[in-house]
Image (cartoon, rainbow over all chains, first blue to last red; front, side, top):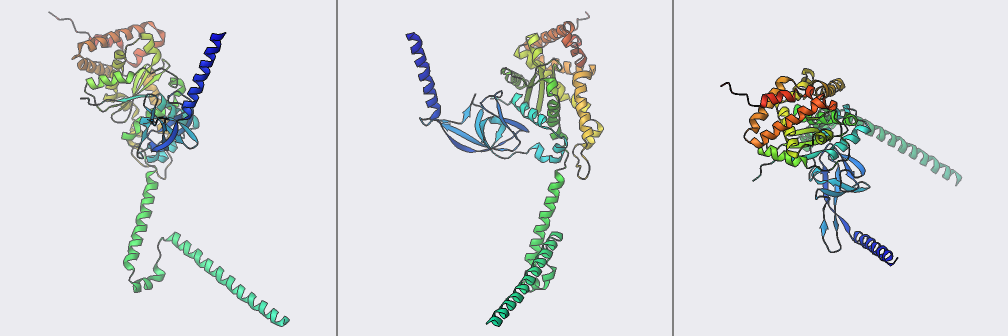
Length: 145
Length: 302
């Protein structure tokens, strides 16, 4: 009985500690970046399979945020160091870092606006187009020294 | 006193009506002015003499040129909105459009672990001297399509790969990379692209459809051709022979890799002969058995 009580107390204190730790993180703006793919998703967590909060299209501006811990340590990248914490409208979530650019991009749907409209994509198509960029495994070959 | 009051009221009324009339007239003038502005953006003809007298002709000309440039740019921008993409921008969009339209059939939207497939494939590309190539790999949870490279923009490659196929054959990362590399060779040779690119489509790409309806028919036909290549027609014997012989030549400098390729083809050959789910494979890529024959060293005549 005592053991049970002690373990419960330990779990409770750990939980409280975790809550306090997350509570002391402050968020601040790093800068504005632009989405550089056709369509994409803002996720609840730094994972391509986590819940989708909202969908954005090419050149959509997003506010990149950083978290600062109590001891002054800054966190800009999340997950496996390849996700940004961003704010888009009323949503705060995560997006893959290589899907954001510092400057505005040349976007297919902007360059060929009427052609893209002509495809008559419905809401289902737009959803899948954004999911496509969650599901792709991507890379680039380079000259290595 | 009363008379004085009445007189004052009458004079005020007359004054007010005159003011109202003036106001109405000025509004009318303003309206015609705005209308004139809309019709001809800068009409200074009515005050030509005054402008000449004030020495403002140069300024007027500058303003008119600025306005003309603005109007022309706006017209050109509106016109550009109807541009049909050139081949350089078309293919990746078209392939993704096909993937989106066939998402439920291909079953690519599913939760899967991170296999790091791209890393081993990129290592192979680099070992073979193919640099600055963007790679997109999409795993499918179906055997409808086993593996393929879709037409894409320059220096970009979109690969499809069936996860059930990888699991059934228990393929290693090197074997998977070799399958992708074979598709990479096919994509570079442009077999798929050439099949989809009809004369109509080729003529349509890079044009402008301002004032004409959007040619949805040509897009739907292209979508159908994608499906035909990947699920029915596949590649010809000649195309398959060219691909296999190029693989042979490229891999021969690394005998371990070449042997892995041979073993892989044997595995695929056995699977397509024994498992009904993969019967169609030999129709799309004819055929693993022939590939093995092309690859195996011929016995000496002597």
